[in-house]
Length: 321
Ligand code: ASP
Figure 1 (cartoon, rainbow, N blue to C red):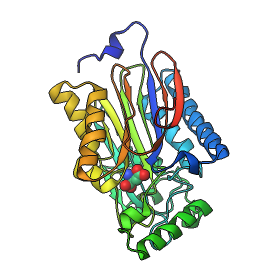
Figure 2: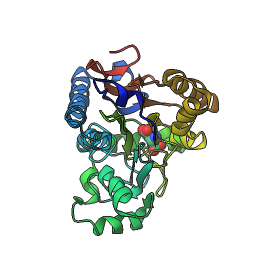
Figure 3: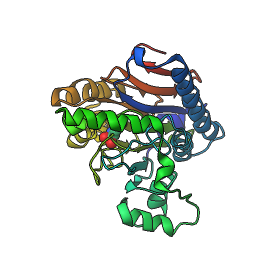
């Protein structure tokens, strides 16, 4: 393997970008306290990921560390605080990918694993497979001694229950189930470590009011999650569109095959391809030079970043920094 630019520099580059979901949050609907709490949690996730990167740790450990913070926060639609399915439970999806070694692990429809990103990583490292779903994923979790289990109701929060009720009322009034549910709060992270390795991960409860058994884009390698030796991507948005347009891989392919810049590739897919198809959402991406892109076509996307020069920030709405 050729050395990446990060590996040939005197001072190694590291970079980290995270998201806490894109969606239709309007400035007027987010209280100042909620926004402060969300920004605080995003900063904690950045700190957790950066603690790994700053001591020369592996990008995949940084991704996992950042996502664990967001899975444990009830503010985000992943782990605690996950969206409700139409029948009132939680089915969690997650994926993680190590771009350097082209390894990946994913789980779908998980119901009792507190940290689905850990289970996805275990699939990658301790099974012969890339993706496990439903009962099979739960049974695989049974074989691991290091994964915390919780009752499905542990993921409940009042906010998500109210969102389910609103979605079901809208559906009864004639809205499409997917539109009625909407989404917000999926989490993801992409990291570049000092050795030039890139990793990406995504974790979600999926879309509110989703049908039992529905699997979104987040755990599908190439749709919601991707990493190779050039770039990494984690998506958040209306998953069916992200699957049909292989969003995460399309961004990477534009860089690999056409020589697009990261910013151009990510913007083209998120700002043009997805809306043209009728979907919406956003993505975070970074490349091996430490460039970061965070496009979204929704009113907001919770996001945070630490650039190679150490500058960092968290943001919610367009134009925030
Ligand atoms: N993409 C996720 C899904 O469709 C939802 C989200 O990003 O909020 O399951």
